[in-house]
Image: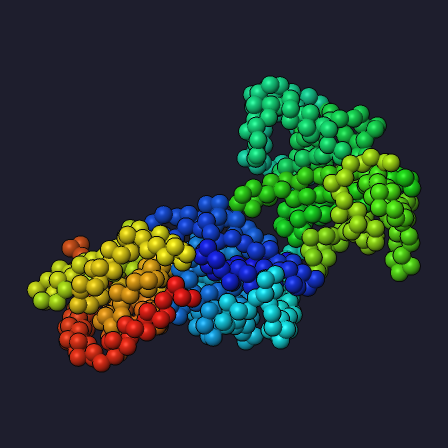
Length: 438
Length: 202
């Protein structure tokens, strides 16, 4: 379950932020909590509408994509802080991301009251029309005398408090499910709206150039007077020439593909011929709508994956692609990309063979792969157990005939259609290593 | 003649709460001197560890210190006082305590029909907190609903019944200010206690 946490304070030091961090870390096996910063949100002013600012849009997008919200509020002057109130005012003026959203309130304070009045007040504010959040009734979590509540490692000291917090959080998880059921399923067939023919456009779409053309890159480049060769490009964080950028991307030990928010395939790091690639691409394909790069039968699966990434159901979709023999374990990672406002900007698809990394790790740590007797799939060959599945088509492995399932209830971030093999967590921990097979 | 500080509880350019206070300043000019104070330029309260209170806040605090009482006109956003007003009250209780035992009259104007009933209740609760300890005039509520239609072109209140109510309450507030001067037996304790809830010691 994907939750976002908002600490209602912009103070230099906030125990409420600490409390949220504790919840995020300590209960990570129950919920996936992302803590959102409200530091940069300006004071609400209806004469100076900042609804479209990065900080407000970022919060709004993150809240919309989350299953529920946890707000940790301090108490100032018997009420919530102005900074938190200002955020809620922005989120109830022109946009209403909290509408129908399950919310859990917690709070920490220096005195023994533990933000009791602020919590009541916050409840009333969240339930007002325009905000329309659905606050979990009862289950108040008040953390008083907070200065003594945490140890040096920022963990709550009192086991009973942790127990109660767990109980409250478990109830909230159920509450979120009930409320989101009541709100009705998020249109199960929303994925059908994904247009792989790229008929729409996004602000970066290069118009007037045939997407299907083999020389789309050259034409689009001419049309936009694109930087090239020794032109400098300012990046986050550095400055490179286009040549340097190409050296850099083409030397990545993996295949990289950029599909934009309009489902147009606009880039891959061209460092090998199609026949030598794990997921083959040809220079003529760049610019194609994604529909061009997949067989018809695969389209619904691709649409479902893209839709999960676009709507934030998951931010990373992993897919082991079978059919490469026992010496390869090819992974396709589909990573959603976002701008500073949290708006979806497309997919970064990474394709790589992780076997060299696994072998490197094993040889350097003196270990061997062993079969897990409890595993549902063969630990070593994993996905290849389904070798009968047709080899994935040219551009995207997402079209492998493995129907994507709803993202995993617990983490939301991993949505493997196959059970994770036991070897994988270890592999992840050394993923920075080179693919040197020694 | 009483001197009052009137806090415009909104940062909107065309606030009807500002209009209401401007009207009172003119209409009651013979009875009292009313000084309108804006809070829109105060920075967001962030409980700075260096205890630095912005100059804009200390300037307001000084005005309140010198006034016989404070009138606050509040809008209502999301069933409560707006963030910008809450923000001002946070600064005005952070190492400075201009509101302790200060007579306060709460009024409010809203576009809708309820006229800020819930924001006023919220504001009362805030002003009653140990960090602020204001002396809020009890059992008095001036709710101006449909505030966009409430004033004529000269900025005068159109509804005579509303005007009569406002005049009555304002006159009562002047009496309340005088009575509050008699309610002085806890002043010293209050002042001492407010130092003890000093945020710095938190």
